[in-house]
Length: 265
Image (cartoon, rainbow, N blue to C red):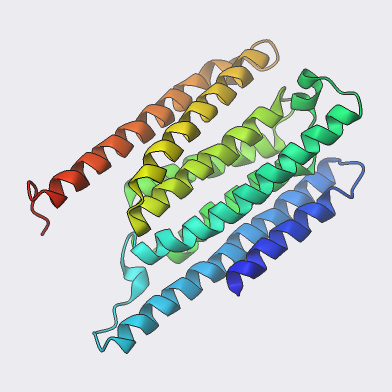
C-alpha cells in the first residue's frame, strides 16, 4: 500500500507540475522542495515499512530479532530501494518523453528541446536529492565510506544542476540522472534477488546511455560553461568505469563463491 501511494503521489505530483505555464526561480525552489519531500518522506516510509516487515518475518520464524538498521546494507533495504527508484525513474522517463513530444509538436527543434528547462528537471533533481538524503537519515548509525562519498557527490551534483544557470542541453543531464538511477535499480535487483542478467545488461546499457548523454552535454556547454565542461568528463569516466568494474568483479566473485572457490565467513 505504501508503495502504491508512492507511485500515485509521484504521478499526481508531476502531472500537477505540468499544469504550470511559467517557471521562475521561486517555482524552481518550490518544485525542488516538493520533490525533495516526496523523495525523503515517501521513500523513507517505504524503507521503514520494509524494515518492520523484515523484523516481523524473523519473529514469526522464532529467531532472535535483529535490529535492521544496525546493518550497513541489509538486503531488505536493496529491495525497498529497487521499488522506490524503479517507480520514480519509470514515471519520470515516461513524462520526459511525453514532454519532449509536446515541445516537438509546438515546433521546437531538437537543440531547443534539449535547452528547454521546466518543472520536469527540477522534479528529477529534487527527488534524487531526497532519496539520497533519506539514506543519511535512516543509516547514520552504520556509516560506509563508499556509500557516503557516492551520496554526497550525487546530492552536490543534483543541487548544482537544479539551480545553476545558464546550462545548455539541461535535458541531457536529466536523462543522465534517470538512466543512471535505472542502472542502480538493476544493481539492487541483483543484490536482493540475484538477477544476474538484468544487472549485467541493465547496468551496461545504463552506463552507455549515461556516457553518451554527458558527452553530448559536454560538447554543448564548451563555450557557455568552459570551467564546468572541462571538469565534467572526469567524474563521468570515473563513474562509468567504476560501475562496470564493480559489475564484473561482483559477478565473478559470486560465481567463485557458488563454485566453492572462495569461502564466505
